[in-house]
Image 1: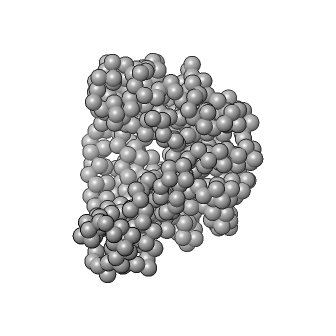
Image 2: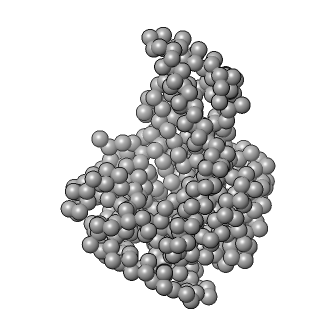
Image 3: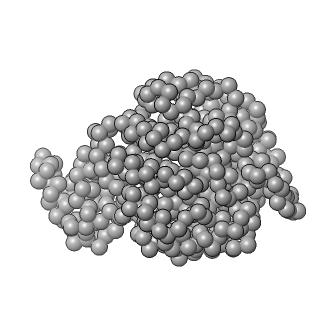
Length: 361
Length: 91
């Protein structure tokens, strides 16, 4: 039976002061007008009414919206758990206090590195010191904080220092998120992929820290599927638990679903949200097992990974229904092995591509 | 953890009733647990004002047909689990 969604990820804007080379936003998109305050508020109410309990306010950079206080206040009054996912860059202490007073439950702050020069190089702007200040304000205002750092070749060896920094900043949670090679990260995959040795070392350090800090700081180490041999259960399965709404109001099962060709998604408000969730063509396309290739349909893990990541399958193999190529049983798995092999061999620095399409050496 | 410990849910958590699922849910950043009835009843008492033994007493009164030893075991298991997940403290 189809469950009701648990989470709404509200992508309030694609605009962002950072230009991270691993940004998971679409590489290109139609620049349609963003939903206004009233439409977002109506959507939150509809989402709550069909069972959503959490709303992640993200982007882009959600702080670039001047109505964020109102949106948080509205979500809070509906009883939704509100989580602000931010770079911190446009924030002032006064505004953070206002957001808290509006009902903000938690902040997830992105960090790029422990080293200022590297952090700012990854972000594409000078941001690191500001982020540290935001972390201190968050703690001072007693807002629970998750520190999130996307791990890749250039920062993964700092993991020990990253954990120490998160501790010093009083983060309650630390997400050590190995890059998922989608969006801009796929464009920059060759530059970002770590070596197997880097990864194994990082995993050991994270495990040890998780034991040491158990009960004080929750440490999540998001395993990179390129090295796991098994797909991850992307979004906990297509259209099973999560709703994502893009800045212009498309209701999606994942934040890149609208980059897949031939799928139809609907706009929030076009018809009742429950109908979109239950009936829209795009949501039903990869639910269940009927769409799966034989390799998946006959596999015991199909109820664990739900067929992996559709965006990855398409962007790597060119086929929507292909087995997720990170799977060791995928006929296309050699494409992943080739990328890994190139990462092992590479010694020179590779330039990065960014959202503003400037190449940064 | 002993009988006099006071389990207290951390500020990042929210315990609330979800009418669509007719269940109590425990929410924290990007995660959540849909609780069965007894787990919900236990966590409602984890605000820092009740010791473990008083929680067991309260649950025994609420579930008079269940053996106290079983209730005690269940309460301890749940509290230990949430403590190891970093969701509550034991003062």
